[in-house]
Length: 308
Length: 274
View 1 (cartoon, rainbow over the protein chains, first blue to last red):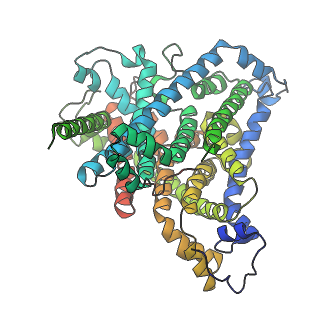
View 2: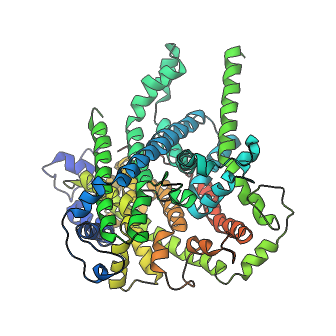
View 3: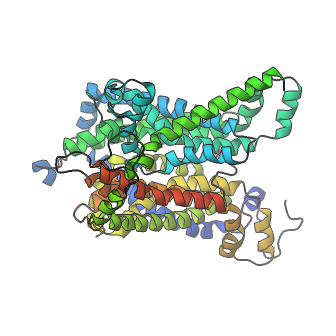
């Protein structure tokens, strides 16, 4: 609702659009003051370390030894070494599998399915389902990883007991599948809540008329629901892809093993920089990860821009 | 009921049963092992002993670590909610050139920098700023890491709230800060609650930063770090202490979730869409 007359103390600004969005009369100066504390903290504890990582990536800095005291600039050597190493590409591929499997497919499909099934419901069943899904999301990762170690244990693990296959070593024989299912379990809540909110925005009348026109459930989803929540889907994909890409929790289940079969990039950086002590190389890999994340983000943002 | 609807019903409840099983089975161990004497990884009917709880109470750092976690989580959540709300409001209402690009860039940076990548610079920074072995240090670092995502989510929330209330408040002579406190905050309260829970859960579970900054003194370490010290002398995980401490460590976040979901509703109202 726009006011019929402009408030007495404010002369009409030249740009009508600026005025209508700045309803509280904040103005740029006060807006900057409001944003300053957050931006200051972000600058000191986020931007500054990031720039430092970029600097480290062109040095031969190590955790110990001569290079720890007096690191030399070695140019782009660290980047070249990373890009020609098979281990790096192996890790990158594993990370892509992990993100596609657990975030893009696992969390999105499961999260949407639950939100869709629960869309018109209220009452104890809905609270129970949502509560359990959210529980998996808010429990501390240390606790959750021990729970999954217990679940997947060879001899006493609940999963083998339920399936009647004692002695089956999930974490050794299917390590990637294990961490993908684990991360789906862990992170579905966010997508479920986001799609739950998004489905609430789809006008019931549109669905009703589609139903009257004889559209099947799938057709209703495709023609009415998805166009409405396109923005939500893409934002959700962007956030969970980035989070999953940089997630370190799988390390607590498999420690990157066996034989590096679950050594995703976050684990690879840790091993290279802190176990191997090659801080410069680790920083270079971090910089490459940042670049990959940028590409992923730009890809989603382009999709968002297109006809929205 | 037509056969089609009966089938639909059966399908619905089957799916729900599968979802319930998938999400509850991994949690069973946490419910049984703490009450079992000499627990293994097997889920079995407990003998309802409280000996494990007595053992954890005698542990020198267990209870103190929960208190440390509380300080870190509450301190960080307060800063995140306050600063993110102010910044998100400003960014939502005033058009600053390059705003969206800036937000996305920060979001990108935060998702990577809080991981293992920036451990070395962050440690060196903390040394320079005299923040080693202080709660404030961990709080500030975690706040910096969580703020971009918090601003991003809250800004979307603010974008969807009606602006007419602010216009009327302004006509009656309210200052911008008053408008934020008395008009905007009540409107976006569920969003603020969600962000607070999200921040608390994040800090409560965060292992890396406190591990890095409280390396020397177990007195200051939060539960996320202490839980990894619960090993037997033979180097095996001490399941008795681990399961019990895991339960104690989980209860606060569960209570918080129940409280918030009852009071405010734990959900994204408009959703995040851009």
